[in-house]
Picture 1 (cartoon, rainbow, N blue to C red):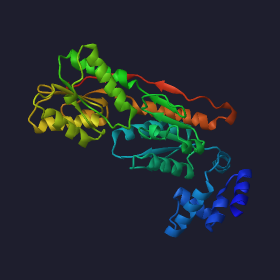
Picture 2: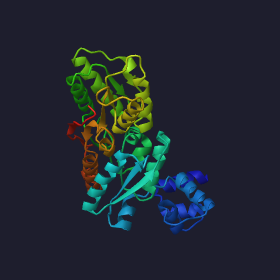
Picture 3: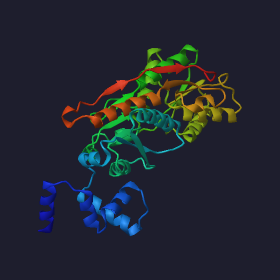
Picture 4: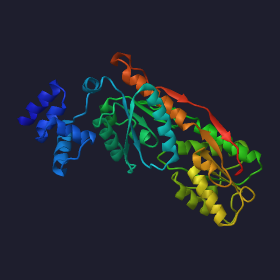
Length: 347
């Protein structure tokens, strides 16, 4: 009977921070401290507040956020590896756009690449006051289309996405075309056995880049040799392992195209450890034009995708959407920005 009454009351009015406080037996200020991380609380208190949040389905509503912050926009970003050059470039673009508009960026770490962990991180950002979300891969595709994400009811955008998504704005490059152009460059330079290092399978960009590699080979009448394909996960360490596997083949490749620059740097180190000269013994190419591309020797030939430009554009869209009236919502936007083949000494 109590459950029915509670459900009926919740159906007529939104759950508020005071509702959470009453259910947890604490003050609204304590709930605020727990959700925003502004002041340490006892572990038992934190657990009681989070249990009440979960049971009541509390999400700060747009009206309450507007009254509390005069319609200020706070954009949440989930990240995995703080040392990742992609994240650094993304933050630069987002922060520059946010500074121009006078809005705030909130970040939250999520090392677990499962949909449930990613959803919890995003929900935590919203509970902490984020009223728009900017996604980096692979979180966008892990969560796109989920009912839990839709319930957050905040604007969302994703960068470096190889395809448009139905529930968020997307900004990226044509990754298939870019990878095809890089492979064609290697073929034009006379390389015939071109190895390829795959990225993490949960990234749509991994598939698109592999398709571009295959399309370039097919256009020259060359089939894909499975022995020349090595698996990676976009990390330097996986590039090092992939490079070792490819270079230790009985007939190693004369060029290796890695799906990002961190893995390409690992391939180059693997070649150096074997006493191989680059590009005399093996050429190496990457994707991203991250800072590491010019910090290694030789400097890396790579595909440049302007991550900070993509992040700035997505941030501008989020700010605009948050400031729109509810009746003016638009269908998701999708934009491809230009890519560039950057030629350096490694190929």
